[in-house]
Amino acid sequence: MLDAVEVMDQIERATRTLKKLPRVGVKSRFCNWPEVVLNFMDAYGYTDPVPPKIVPTARQLTQMDQVIRWMAWLSQYGEDAEYSRIIWYRAENRSWRSIAGRVGLAPNTCRERFRFGVHGLTYAIECGRVK
Image (cartoon, rainbow, N blue to C red; front, side):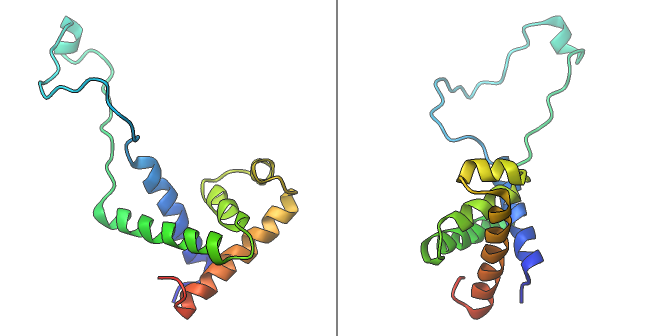
């Protein structure tokens, strides 16, 4: 049984997982050959190292898919489609003022709809309406 805090934690993890995914787009050039060392300084590691991109695990991707299903349910069957947007923006650690500007509501209204949305989603998960 999930409570509202656990649901919000899982949504925040889903936003972080989504940020880890590579950008979608067509690569203009693609080559399987390794990069060639063009500079003496590159050969001996005098340049700044590039940190490796951390790829999300299969479990993180599965949890992200589950959260996206929750958000789709909330926007489809909830009273307002804004609930899912407000919850997602808040999970991305945006300020209430920023969320209010994006949604077109007052910050206090956004806080209220955030609470209603999270608690409604938690109730729907507990009742089995959302998988």
